[in-house]
Length: 123
Image (cartoon, rainbow, N blue to C red; front, side, top):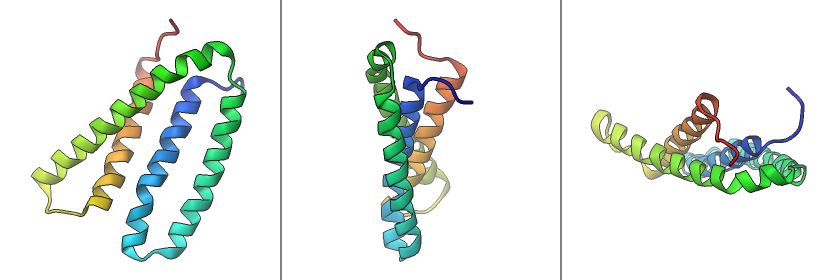
């Protein structure tokens, strides 16, 4: 798996960090203090790895990164909209914190699958 850091990896790490941030209110509302603290520790590690990966990117990957981050943002918005629609049709109101967590998860999954199926061309 090793190799040179890529813009795709950095975008996935940022998406993972955003997903972890979106899950934090869920643990606060549910009264899961230990899980909240563990998530904060894991979030710090993911952010550290993301910064280190970003620093190791070459110039071509740094140029591609803003486009990937905009794609990530669109996928996160699509995930939030998808989960809002899903829960509106198939379940009762579940609370904003659960919707946010589920939407961010779907959005990151869409982004990762999009990178796997059709990688962003460099140009």
